[in-house]
Image 1: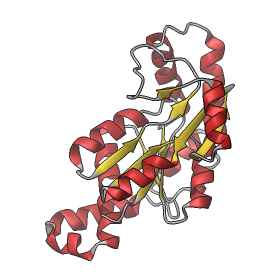
Image 2: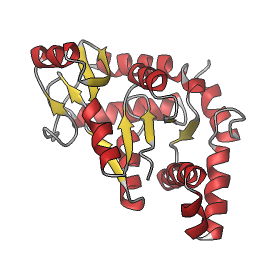
Image 3: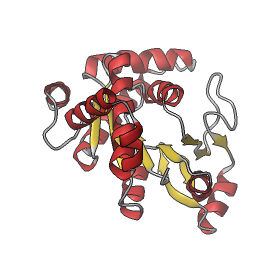
Length: 232
């Protein structure tokens, strides 16, 4: 592996974490960067699994020391990716998945122009609202204003979709997982001809087809329909 950096962003409630978890069961050689945050754990979250939970004072110390590849403040809490995650992945000849928001993604794209950026889209606002409500209940959050704020933030984040190389509409989970797998493998094939030569020819062809359909330039009919539903 050449240490490919994959940036994955999505509005809250888009199912990004589930996609990433399933992808890692299907594709070998992928490290996952666990971000740092100053917010409190939610529900069953554990330190070091979903996030490294830390204090605001320690986070600001890390900022001053230049320890973050990217960081941002969202809804009053800091979130950031440690540079050591990328260094560790490359030292172990693995690719790295970054699960970060749009603010952080833009920072990484500027600093790492070879990074592969993927945006995960909800199929429409109604589905996203339902997912946000379910997530809030799971987190024991009953304030409707929280759901409304997250939904409004989704509209703002979707405006940045064209800055990403790929976009996946997460309506049918198995299809979305297959598309994300195809993108990862296609990027590997493009950078490592020996991997392409050793792979199954039919799988190479299918990965190329799916990855091409997910490119944000032309955009698939499914992506165009999802974007249209958020443009009203």
